[in-house]
Image 1 (tube, protein in one colour):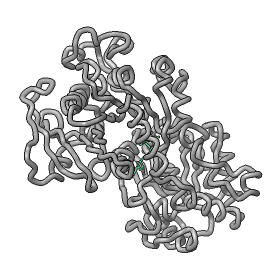
Image 2 (image 1 turned 90 degrees about the horizontal axis):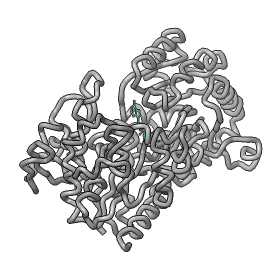
Image 3 (image 1 turned 180 degrees about the horizontal axis):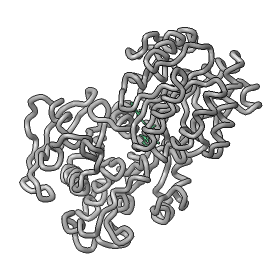
Image 4 (image 1 turned 120 degrees about the vertical axis):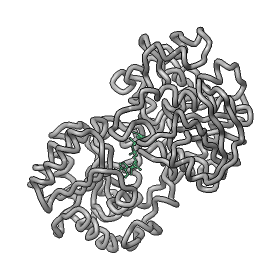
Length: 471
Ligand SMILES: Nc1ncnc2c1ncn2[C@@H]1O[C@H](COP(=O)(O)OP(=O)(O)O[C@H]2O[C@H](CO)[C@@H](O)[C@H](O)[C@H]2O)[C@@H](O)[C@H]1O
């Protein structure tokens, strides 16, 4: 089977978050099931450059108003297609925003063009798998083209919806009838994710709990009615992690590599974390954070608990970037507590590996979390996850309640309320567990033994694809 996977990022070519990790890993996850995945990405400058001298496979004189061509390449040995449309993608800055962080005004056109190109190419594939709002127009174009190729749309985060003014509809190149309640119309404007959700043959989210949560107002963020109406098409398939990239035994970013049997080697990495973040050397735990600094991730609540954490004897090494006010709050905390709180504002892939390989516990106090990958990396690296009980975090971490600790099955600490009290209790519980070396190392080893490889989830996607292609 040949599948076209359409997304705005894919590791290792372009990454701003977890979407890239998953899209980058899918091709290898599906190959054992006889599925060849071709990934279609926008031609950002770095992506086009990575292709070297590539020949155009196809050209458009007018792809939603702009000339474009299709270039071929490989991503980790798997087929790659790149939509080279310089008017849309040849810009400095990030995939979605300029260097100052301001979203590009024409994002609707940039990612609708990606979807339009995918639909134009779909005839060469058995199925199209689109990701998030940036890929979501692919199923919509397929539907309004009357194409026979089935489509899957995966929601990695329903908070990002690609919502625009009604005026952009005219630029989408769709029939008038598409501006309708069951089409692209969304609260009086245009919704790209909404259009995809209304059109795809199947909808997946990245954990079973999140699939359930988004049927309700608090998590559905305006799309709960549509999700509920299409619930027989919605399923949750939990993300895996790519062992070629995330494995403490082989990780080149770690000063000391280790396994569950050689956990004491982590001490060398812990010293490296202390150095990198200017932390005091002592025997207490180092909490780590690798995250976008946003409301979703509960970073405001964490910022409010840092004085308490330091008073308990904890230290923190934080790597992240995001909201300016939160960046400032963490910097200020680090100035207040030199040697106890170290902060690195920015994006650094290698440092994120070091934190997992040297930190004692990774904090993830998310208000909602479709799946979450950093807790899975934490589990694989013996960096115990301390997580809010929501979405994929609830599905992947076994809380260290008394029964679970006694049975030796706990893999982390869960807490229910993302509030100052909820988080400070979780920190206190973590400190108390850390003070008991045996249960703590049992918890680390349990996490490292848990299987979050793509084996099971790859099989689930393959099964879903087959059910649609056969239909
Ligand atoms: N400053 C930094 N430097 C280096 N690396 C950094 C970094 N900040 C974050 N990262 C990395 O970015 C990724 C974040 O992935 P997550 O799944 O945790 O969240 P995200 O919200 O981006 O993804 C969305 O999509 C994914 C994929 O489906 C879902 O798991 C998730 O719940 C959903 O919100 C991880 O690989 C992490 O290590």
